Amino acid sequence: MAAVQKIVGVKGMNDLLPEQSGLWEWVESQVAEVFRQYGYRAIRTPILEPTALFVRGIGEVTDIVEKEMYTFTDALNGEQLTLRPENTAAVVRSVIEHNLLYDGPKRLWYVGPMFRHERPQRGRYRQFHQFGIEALGMPGPDVDAEQLLMIDRLWKSLGLTGDHAPRLEINSLGALDERQAHRRALIEHFQSHASVLDADAQRRLHSNPLRILDSKNPAMRAVIDSAPLLQDFLGDASRAHLAGVRDTLDRHGVGYSVNPRLVRGLDYYNLTVFEWITDRLGAQGTVCGGGRYDSLIEQMGGSPAPACGFAIGVERLVALLEEVAPPALAAGLDVYLVHWGSGSMAAAVAFSEQCRDAGLRVQMHCGEASLKSQMKKADQSGACCAVLMGEDERAQNVVTVKPLRAEGGLVQQDRVPISDAPAVIRGLLKLV
Ligand code: HAM
Image 1 (cartoon, rainbow, N blue to C red):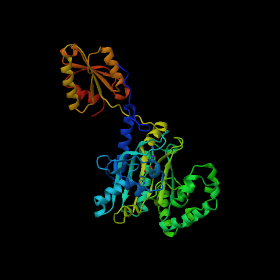
Image 2: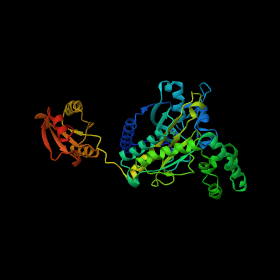
Image 3: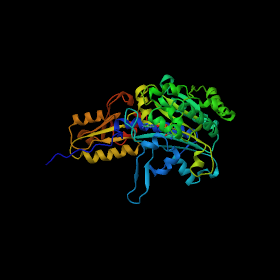
Image 4: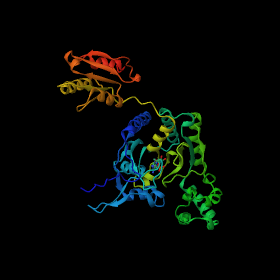
């Protein structure tokens, strides 16, 4: 028979394998707990949305919409659909569709996969995951600052303290008329240096000159560095908003720097924008990004309402933890059940169920194997103890409890009556 060709996964889309999933689950539970502490409630929206949602929401002249969206026509009904590249536009769609703001502001959070057709590299994937927050209906700056305090608390709860924690950069993108005045000045500036602009910059000059500031082209460094700064165009209200955010950060000892070049890659932002960046992950060091988007809801067809949010890249956060502060996670299993001799299976199944009734996590050995090989499996399983049921034990209605690792709190091997065993094991493992 001809060799069957293996099918491999899509480039840039990763499997989360069991040796990593424990860390992901732990991070998810920490994040969910901190979000709940601030009154955020979960929302889940579909992974597929109409393409127009992202084009209108994120902005036509952005990297995401121009070249990174997985878009296709649904062959069954001709609809144009896109795998969500981010979730702010989708949450706003849902909030408008279900009229969620009818009784006042909402604090929402989500976690899930996002899709961007980028060039894969460490920390940059085509399917990646985000934890996200959207606070809708609150004009701030108190809510902007509260979100930054929440993120700071999250780093601490994950053990990312001191120079292990990402650093915060903030900026203000001001109000629409301020951005328009700045935009006119930018176009004038870049036009007067037209000869050094690359093709991308030429194309963006009139559609989205702000994005030119994001260019990594070294030949344009000087002309970018000398470009007019938005902060010089900010009016009193915008300055006061930024000052309000800074005041709260200062009072709570959250360090930050103001980066007047921080613009973000999505068009919906105004006033406060921020990024949390680590130097530990190479080029893809932005772990979290967000800001205020006060016109998006109206722009998507809802009644005008201010909003503010952010998203954390889960892959980058997990990579940072693995790099600087891997937590000591408790073993997933309490007991590995080793059994042998004729008719041992039925007794082993019954005993495992009895242990699970008592709240223990039990993996029962399945299939024929020698005691030695079962003990090896027990050791590899990560369980705190092995419980042995041989013919001898069964004849005497006992089990042998054998500690496998010191952290379990068990010290020496012991024989325990079967009926008491679950409670005794819980006691030995300090689960009671
Ligand atoms: P974003 O800056 O595009 O913002 O993405 C947020 C975070 O997602 C990034 O800081 C990064 O950690 C992670 N991320 C983005 N692209 C990739 C990728 N290709 N591979 C791995 N990680 C990635 C947003 O998505 C906005 N929706 C955030 C927001 C919510 N603003 C307001 N509300």
